[in-house]
Length: 98
Image (tube, rainbow, N blue to C red; front, side, top):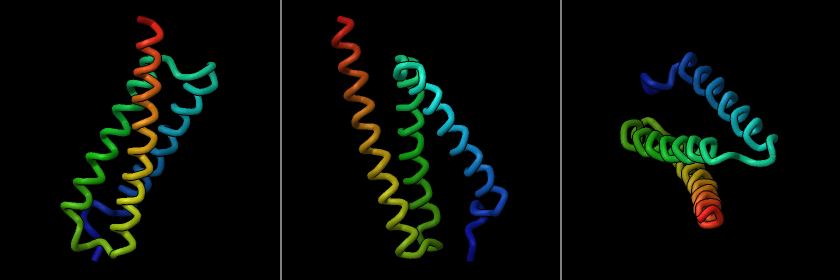
């Protein structure tokens, strides 16, 4: 059974959103690296991704297969890894400016 939130329209909106998110990161990186504002937006997006993944696991756990659960967890680990490096980079930038 498909979760009510996992409709084809929802998946298309999510896909377009991820495409826009990728374009944002590409444009931030093309200008010699992200500025502080772009880094903060990116960090906020990663935190929101983690929260949404947890909500997905808690609300749709019974509708997900073992592979689906594993993919969500793997995605969370990957995003957490990127988040860690973004936070480290932002801290280094702050230290360099101080």
